[in-house]
Image (tube, rainbow, N blue to C red; front, top):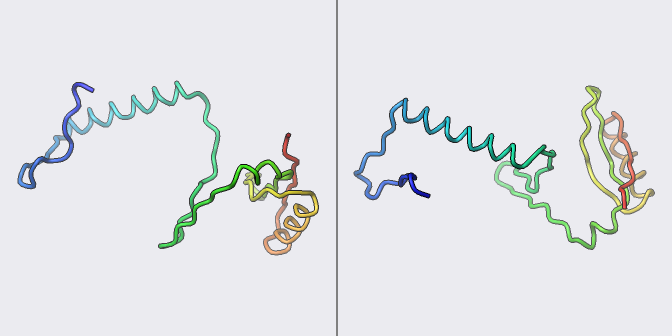
Length: 118
């Protein structure tokens, strides 16, 4: 970690200023590191958020492994533009049908029911 500089001032009176050239160099380095890490990670897969923030309320989405093993069907909402979004997963075709019919009744559109691969 040589070459890294302290980013927080040691005292409140110590100025911490960067020129436009220095800022451009730092940004260029940051972008290059991000690209290098992205190439090393390979193709990315979209992941749904594990937290939902609504105004001041934070909802954490945590699922027990035992629950995941029971799930058998996935409901996918397909918009008129052709975009797909996974809505939820259910344990059983009956629960999937009930949820899909309620979603279509409330919002319209097309809800696909897919089986989960074992």
